[in-house]
Image (cartoon, rainbow, N blue to C red; front, side, top):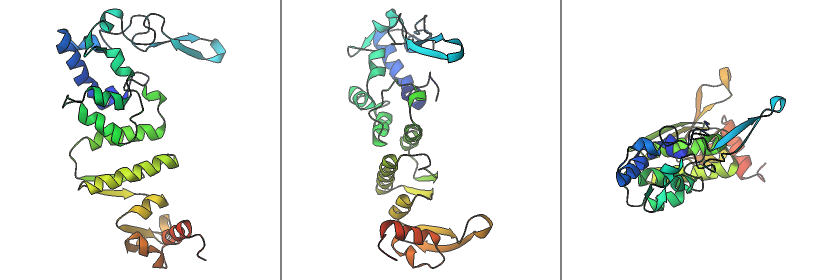
Length: 242
């Protein structure tokens, strides 16, 4: 969660955006980097300055020189389709996808970010301000923008809010519907219930496990007497069942 890293830089899409601005304005791409030539000299491209409060720690406030926009004035005067580079970074990912709708190198990654449910995040928002679930979906979006046909996930719901878990399950369903395969190691009952095929290891954990106690669809796991997963799944979805 770096203060200098953003969805635009982390996904690599910012390189293509800077190249577009450079070509439109006949300057070097480095001019549009807030970590390089274009950075505001006062805040060094952070957009904020820190005041040391000794024993109370430091406090951040918007930079007076660039008004929190990260760049010096010469860069902000350069535009692409009437928008400055700072304007683009302030766009939500959804708005940026529309803005770059005709750019084949940029649009697929932005669409992937929208698909994983973080289209509301600003393209230039610091990763240090994102939640664990948002960062996890950001990493997933990068993989989904590729051309893989098999995804292997290790506890993908770990640390996620219940709403994030529901969104993740919907996303995994869409991946499978598009023809890819998803293999997940998971303990979350909602994910287990939505799987097409289960392999349940048990009957206990650690040295008490290691045996395949069930293979098949989730609907039939409750009939496996050695499956603790089946018992918990049945209790979660049919609490009235003794």
